[in-house]
Length: 295
Image 1: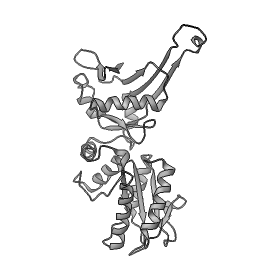
Image 2 (image 1 turned 90 degrees about the horizontal axis):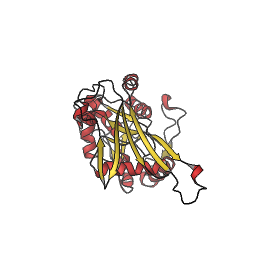
Image 3 (image 1 turned 135 degrees about the vertical axis):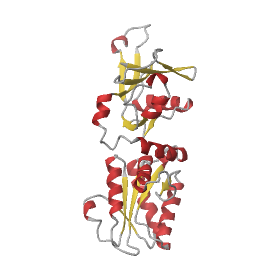
Image 4 (image 1 turned 60 degrees about the vertical axis):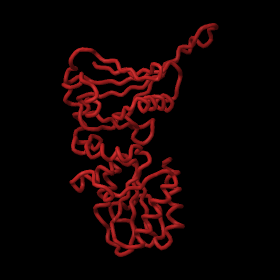
């Protein structure tokens, strides 16, 4: 077993690890962080994340919020420590949920002049056999995609503040106006709405789109009938991909469309009026953002 113990010494991160040349190739890796007090899961993860940011550690960070899954860049983690050179399975990027533990000795509570023993800790576990089972899962990112994702994250380091816009692209003033309303209203909330054609992070078309979907914390799918009622199958593919990543997707439908396409029938959606986007889109956005607790 190989353990990294994260401890705060006068504001400096101390990583303890064996001083021999390497770690066995199949050795699991456990990352611990402990505080000697009784803390909620959110609070200890908040302290841990602040410690990571203070020490410019970027290989581990929350995907959407502190208490759910975190993004773990295994390749960057491996490059950070010489002793991990021979651990071949540490590659790509995964999402992982931290384990939460509390230790509270209630028997001491009634004793006088005695300190109550309290302890809260979190643990991230990385095991070769579990990663092998995930190798075909969308939660594991290929090395090729991890390169383009790093470029994306350099431009947009806070994924919580990034949304991905999915739509059929038409060169019309009405559609550009809708996009403008979406972007400007979200910008007021500190959120950036991105389209996959804004910057190329990969030379491959779908790899570039996947980079945006992996890098953003939520998606907005726009369905309109400005020039045609035909549906774009790529939009359905992108929606399915983001849903497989467990990322929330707002389905925003033009009220003049009779229904969504067949594969989305039964999904909840919000309506807008493409002729009056300034007055109808912000209402739908605000309600959905509030429901999904996106801020």
